[in-house]
Amino acid sequence: MTSKPPVRIGIRAPTNPIEIPKTRREFFKTGATLAGGLTLASGAVLPALAEGGHDHTMAAGGHENESPMILGSAELVQYGSRSPFEKSVRIPHPAGSTASPDTFGKMFHIASPIGEFHGTITPSSLHYVATTRQSYMPEIDPAKHTLTIHGVVDRPLTWTLADLKRFPSVSRLHFLECSGNRHGPQNKNVQESHGMTSCAEWTGVLLSTLIKECGLKTSAKWFVAEGAEEVKGASSMPIAKAMDDVLVAYGMNGEAVRPQNGYPLRIVVPGFEGIFSTKYLRRIKIVDRYYMNYNDYGHLTETPTDAALRYQIGPKSIITRPSGSQTLAGPGFYEITGLAWSGGGAIKSVEVSTDGGASWKRAELKSAPQRMAHVRFSCPWNWDGKATSIMSRCTDEVGQKQPTLEQVAKYWNKPYVKGYTMPGLNNSVMPWTIAQDGRITNGLL
Image (cartoon, rainbow, N blue to C red; front, side, top):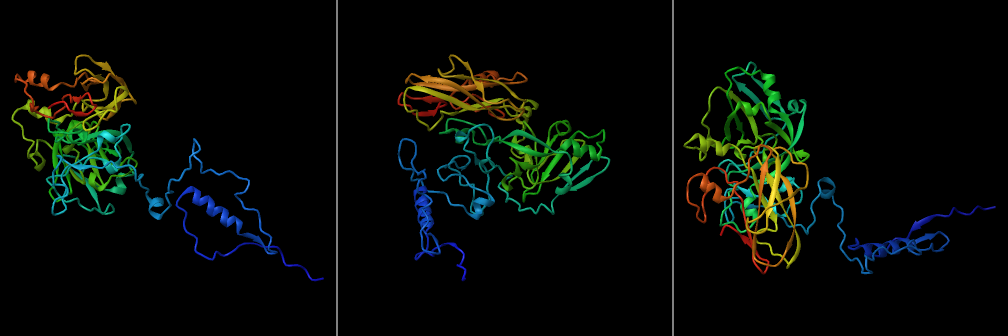
């Protein structure tokens, strides 16, 4: 007896190439076509796989979901990207500046879209950027990069990046802020007024751990941190700060520090003006006196009081929604939200005023405040449709309270006038004016 050939299941070759489906409905139609093409060798056609099943292309309410599908690619597998509907971008600072990038590809200040964020952490790709006198960003091979600590120490030491990653690491949330983050009447929105600050999770080794390896001499009073830019960034800081909370960071938001923020190594000096957090860190010298360095250009002060105003940031807060250039849809409920931070420690409380400062209401902190880190706050508000002014103020854990410009002027015994320039770093209250038609503008005008 001649045996029959075994039954085989195969797919009929299409006469035309199959096009990649662009929507879910096209996908299921293609699936049904392919299923209909599954045959037995005898010619009997198998039931289409989609028959008797459910069509999942109907969205809630019975409407067809014809959204295009995002097709996978090698790039999406390797790194990923945001939705094309998200349009937040950084802008040169100050607004309208042509310094970033300039004709030669150098960059200076770039402001973060702070008004469009949620939570407290700034995405690495949208973190603000400030460079040292428009230097080029150095492209550094991490395998060849080293950090040296020397000066008035017992043992000068040099480490590779691999060496540093062998030390016990810490991960901490800290904000950075440029001294150029000075809001004034010229700012149309919160990105222009407060976009030169960001908050990230930094990972690395405590500088105190490395200094202890070197052995600190009793004459050590200051340390100088130097970067590897074309124009060497260097800043003198008290040794007490180095032994407290300064971080030598190689990680940022779970990945390597990005080139614009100092790859492969930078220091993070919590609470201090951003220029002290030297990028592309290659050398730290422990010294017995204050060294005048290039970064001091433009930061020279006449009195110890003025100098103190330039070391530490804050306390500071800003309402990011609703804020300048935005428009309220009409009377009704809104959530007022924003960010608060202080170089003096953690934020203790935030207050919001919706009547131009006549009265204040305590806001809710949306997460546990961290030392020298942004914290998001919010406050419920029922707008009655009348013109008003909204603003926020904060208090930190050591009792420092954010002042108004009028209070600052009174402290310095100067009459307050529109456009008053605050000495030191500007941490004054920023008001937003809301018109009857819902348009929001700068309240300092």
